[in-house]
Image 1 (spheres, rainbow, N blue to C red):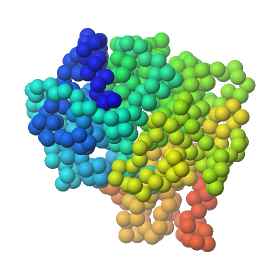
Image 2 (image 1 turned 90 degrees about the horizontal axis):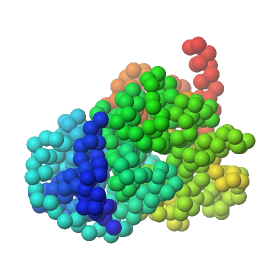
Image 3 (image 1 turned 180 degrees about the vertical axis):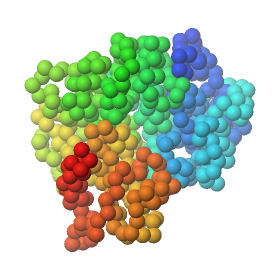
Image 4 (image 1 turned 180 degrees about the horizontal axis):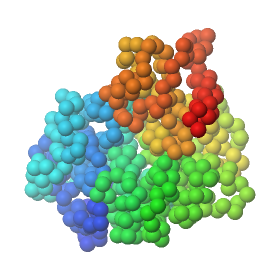
Length: 509
């Protein structure tokens, strides 16, 4: 069940098929990629003394070596700890320490950040394409270390409840994600490319697996990121491409004036809350009926619900606009229910907490039995979403019980921003909410009680948390709205913010 077995087998049975691309160039076929992975795995075992179950972190921007490192870790029997490269150094350090990783692969642009913030458990930092990395490729190829389907393959770190938690995704979980992708989202043929324009340390990295499993090509842009003009050019080199995007990325693609040969796009997979009906209409006018919307937390490897290509494309249905506003239907094999406070399953149209269970749901949180027991109470994953099903079985999200903010496809927990703000000596209280935003989905807004100014608070946030998490607006108020028990009333804050937003728009227009 070791995920690395598929790559090893591909190297023998389809040796000359393209496997890994960088920009306009093909780097390696499957034989070469499998050989390099086996050599890196050998160095991990023999030089670094990696034991089965040891954690190895990857802190890197999108680079081709990401694929090699990921499969080499599995080949050697280790557990991969891919991280969000946009996190602040202190946030990365917390993940590295919590995971207990001894080894860290890093891209050259992030090596100094890791070197500065690495906790004591990190024994070796291996920088991609540096001398230490090239030396690993001189090792003799090692055999694959056997792993069971229930062995952990990937620790996906999330900021649920404001603290880093490593969702344990097993080899079986990721194989199930691969099957679901192939059968329901994006049928992959031999040599079909996947363009990694979204971060590989987050959702895009999951798609490495189905493309290896089905002998496709993982392609990394030379920029390592999302630039519509570069993406459109790459489509000429890599026809029949698919990619993972967010609503923000899709809207920027639509607005970009550069020419694009849409016939070279196979599927644009959009993760997170779907685009609005109007934005979807504009996207299909530009790129055609090539969109599928997936939804799910990292605890499900982004495989909870799906609004299929047919659902998105069938605009003649009288209920199309209503359906586009939904999260779609459960993936096959995924059971999703809405329940009330007593755990009773609700009928269609009734709103409650959204729970799910299925083959892609994590085994639990790394070294955190208490959080695991809460998250998987009753055998279901407590998603933190609030919503309901309609009569056709489409899931509609109405809120989030944990207050999580989804901005530009990234999840931001209010508490981590609040804790950064409270480091300012003049801030007595702070509460953070998400404000609806057409471009980003939501933006972070901070309501602050105390003596401070927005500029100082912004600098403070940049010193402690990732740039994308910092508030886009600071609102200073005499007191936060609270219940009789002293709890901040988030709903009241959102109501006040909704009243404030139109007034702000009128002032600036």
